[in-house]
Image (cartoon, rainbow over the protein chains, first blue to last red):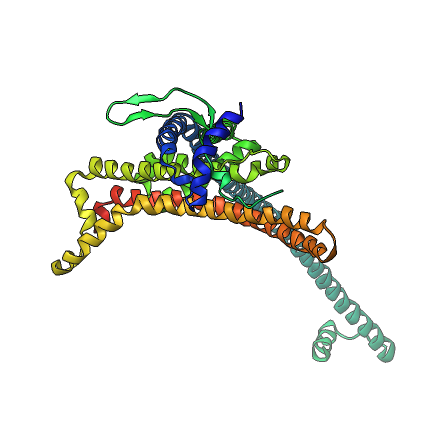
Length: 180
Length: 274
């Protein structure tokens, strides 16, 4: 089987080699090679345009789209989460403000109540203080009045003892006023 | 004993005979499956297997899908996108087909070389056949011409008259532009063909040296030094293999990049000030 082709080439090729010709310039081999190459290239081109390129290129595009879509949805989710976080922060801020308001109101109310009670207590205290003052004054006046009587009595009895004669009440009185 | 026959690897021979098809006007065309055609078929099958297992459309790519997507991104993100722009999206399958065909056919000439160790011919580099590179270059060239006319109508010819050039200069410029346009299929095909054939010939020669010098070394005496030469040649083959892998990828990339440049000319003809 291998001998007959070898024989056919042997008849044509060696003389060409001897004359320095390339086997590639053996023109009778050209038409068959060219037509076969056209057919085979056509088949490859057909498969390439119908099968390989759409499938491989499609997979690449699909992947790029998927990645872009995923990144987009991730970004959207992130934005949503950020918006929710901002809303939550705002809510917290409002709640804190409300709580602070309530607390300060309560504090003010307590302070006011305290002040009122203190004022009432103060008033009561002042009242009893005034009453005590009055009582003290009355007791002192009385005591002072008694002191004068006692002094007059003492003076008249001393004078009586010294002179043997009771002084007139008017004189004792004058003497007390003058000494006083 | 081994002899230096670096061109033998490029010989086309029949593998499965198919009766010639007679095309009116062209004569009989031998449609037999040759080793070159077989390499193209295996290459196409490798592409289908590679990209078929990559075309799963999973959101989280597996190993093969990640590999296929890396290739796709190379075409879409490095070539078509920056060079043509959004208008170039419909041409991604075309550029991708060119890139994969050239890449796989180039690589097959290197990866399958493991089978050549047993003295069999596993490798056949279809891209080292001028017929194949010329066909691919013509496909690219004619696609550019057809797309150019479909997209721009007769404004297509503005391609040969760059804008902002004083008219006396056009007398010289237009022929130059036309020649540089017409020569594109030639440069496209010769660049790939030359790179592939050159690398494979040099590798073949050094690989033959390994065997020849080792055989010489076995004969003893001063010829024992042949072993040294064989070792040096062996390392040359290893180094060249690494280089050829780079070249195989680079030529596929360059072919696809140039196809993008040429397509860009006609797709963005209005917005480029040609």
